[in-house]
Length: 175
Image 1 (spheres, rainbow, N blue to C red):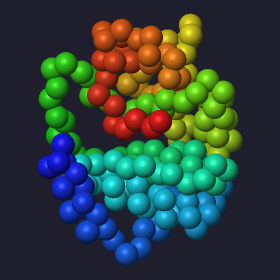
Image 2 (image 1 turned 135 degrees about the vertical axis):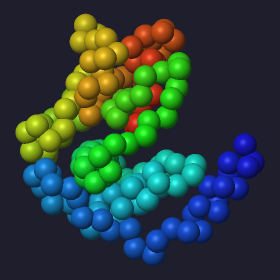
Image 3 (image 1 turned 120 degrees about the horizontal axis):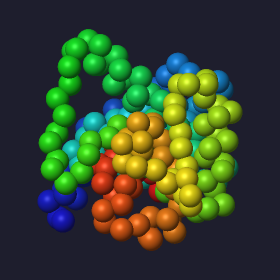
């Protein structure tokens, strides 16, 4: 709506001059300068109303790694915040279960790349990842226990409204 676009424009006026942000612990590789800026920008955008954004770097510049860094960063930031506050309020939604998981929807040809990036670039155990595709589909409770759920556009298109994938309110959705 027009009001949403106006809020988005107003939010952009408050953006910091520098977005660079050091990645969280658990990342095995160093981020390039444009990736640390992308990480900082996405963390900032997620704190805004309306939240979210589009990371539109050219192909081959490491968008997958930047997004994995965002997931790792916000997971660790949430854990630190919960330790400080000892409790966190959760929004109630009678239709969907709350989840801290990120849903990544990709073409089938790219799903393996995401899985390999998580395995090779993140310290073992820092993030949990599962494929929601074909016979690997699981129940809602299982899906919400992962940090990253990878699926395809075709799988999402075939899902029923009451399927496990649709019963969760995802922390973020990456296309």
